[in-house]
Amino acid sequence: MLWYKAWLETRVRFLICFCGIVTLCAWNVYRMDDVKSTVNLAYYYSVLHNSSSQLALLMLLAINFTTMGGLLREKAVGAASFTLALPVSRAQMMRARIAVSLLENAVLIAIPWTVMFIIGCLLGKTHSLSQAMSHVGLLTVGGLVYYGIALLASSLVEGEYTAPIVSFGIVAVIASAFDDPLYRPYNPLYLMMGGGHYDARAGLLVGPVPWLQICVHGLLAACLVLASVKALQRREF
Image (cartoon, rainbow, N blue to C red; front, side, top):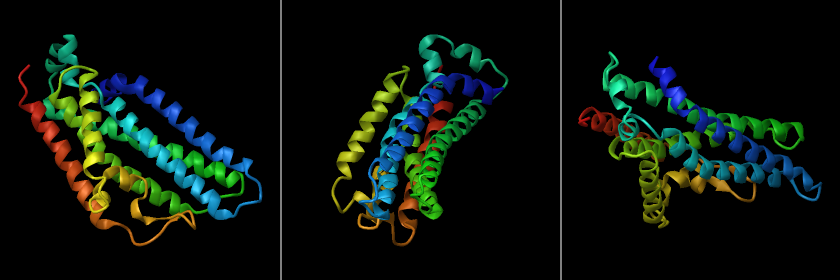
């Protein structure tokens, strides 16, 4: 029941994000065939990389939209009493909400990339499954940090639109603070876009897996999610 309730709350926003993201990503890859045989294979790989970078930016919006809501939003509109009267704990409510929103965001990453890869293969231009999986992995890890930020904002700030505004503000601060080349490897968006592992000549991600950045971002995301649950448990309604 809690899963279904969380789905009902987010399904419209999710479907809007899904249709928009899939359409834009598919069009970007399909359009690459306008350039004929005057370029090499690296160009087509770079198209996929650039489309993945665009997907990273779109995910910043989608994560905030799909994470909007929750008990504080219900409190703002006067509907929290019904949810709180259910025979479940706040932690159970949060677990269901987190599970549904994580699944939605995973779909928003995996399906657009699958569509881009299939279109590229049908056009005879892309065949690197490992590159696709690498991009999806980096998008997922970096996206978890922004998900944690959005979830924490929605657990601390009342109002359906106030929390996303606060979350976007934090994202802007992070982008500015980590713009220095020394700290850029720990910028979640930089990681989502491939970071320093992108070779422009080949159009591919190269080098070893950035396990340090992945672990740091994963730990940070876990701390943000845990803080969100604790904040909502201690909230007075």
